[in-house]
Length: 73
Image 1 (spheres, rainbow, N blue to C red):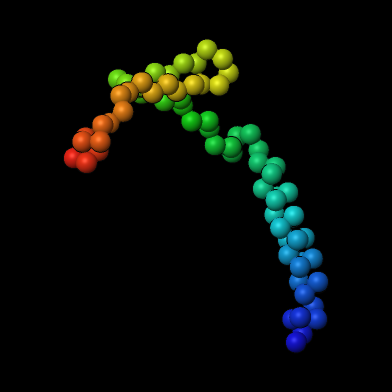
Image 2: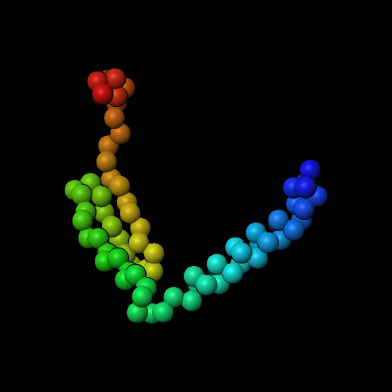
């Protein structure tokens, strides 16, 4: 019964703890940050990667399987 009476205090303390931890982890020094992953340039034969603009676009040019080929899988 005491938990039900104090649920507001429990909720507020949880919000305060979550807020404090998010602020504590938001200020990571530049030297301790993880390095950005290197871009992967592996391209299969039927996949074309175009990077003309800011966003890379992947175009997959492959034929669709027929019903017989799907059934064989």
